[in-house]
Length: 459
Image (cartoon, rainbow, N blue to C red; front, side, top):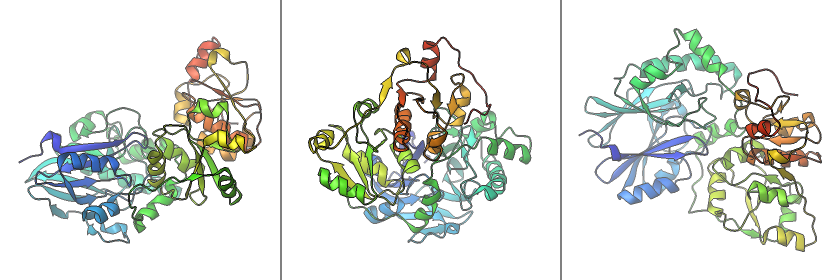
């Protein structure tokens, strides 16, 4: 019968750079692949089509988000499909290489494709003997392959060699076979930029530079050379997914807290996270608060910069979606959400507590200051202000002492830079300014050309 084009529904998380998939099986049931714990989009898509999720398949023990499979099992009675080698501590159907699941007209075949993780499976969707597509998770992705260093530096090369063999196996499928990866552009589990999130085996054979490697050693060198830093929380979530995330009943509330209650949370080792836009934070904020503007990448920076063990209080702007704060936190395992400051900054100031501000300027109004660029090294190498110091945002908390005093802090637009400024202020820096814009804006305003390359510009 094949698979009608509209029966495969990609669900893209732009912030984490991942895709989940909902497959309409044609009989009122659906298959979900690599669903995140934030199931709002998946449930909305299923409801629009009148579908119940009968199967929830995970390609691997995810490091960048908590799986929604356990929740789907609870809510929908879905059968959880995952690698038997993952030793998951909850009810599931453990699969090994070659196992097949009858989906009622279509078949799902497990293919062992280790590399990104040891227990990684890809899932080949078949109509009879015809290969329709393969859910490749973190093995073959568009123009690359997912990283192999998440289990420690001592495992990186061995897993890269396994990844080489896994990709070669997948390229034995017919050229017309669709490739449906989980990781894509924007994911810290993968390397390449680009907008395409799906592909075909034939297209990858022609365009994927890793598949063009003439031998295994070259493949390993190319893959491992592309690996940059990744968020700290990645080191925790694989085990959390093996144990299985807790069940959530609806959207957990974000309770309004009085000024006194907020101060009590801080005294208990908590943190204040200000999710308002960068310009609002610059105009006034609670001293010591961390600026992480609420946007798609909120979860990434929350999980990179703060522990999951401390209570969190949020400062919000009028009209911001409180459920978005909750679900972005919960999908990476941050559940100690104490609440939000009721009444916002006016309530804090009315109680007699101080506010502080941060200089936020456009490139045309900047004076000559030391320039600290907090983008990823790969972004920096593609074009940076001459003389700039590169300290990645993820490493700034431990590298704050290396940042020059009186610096202008910049990223691509200003959001990450404001986060960086808040970290520097927490570390005792004063006279920090943030660039409202990016390196091209600054260079143009000062009559400079952007430099390029990989020279070491760290302090």
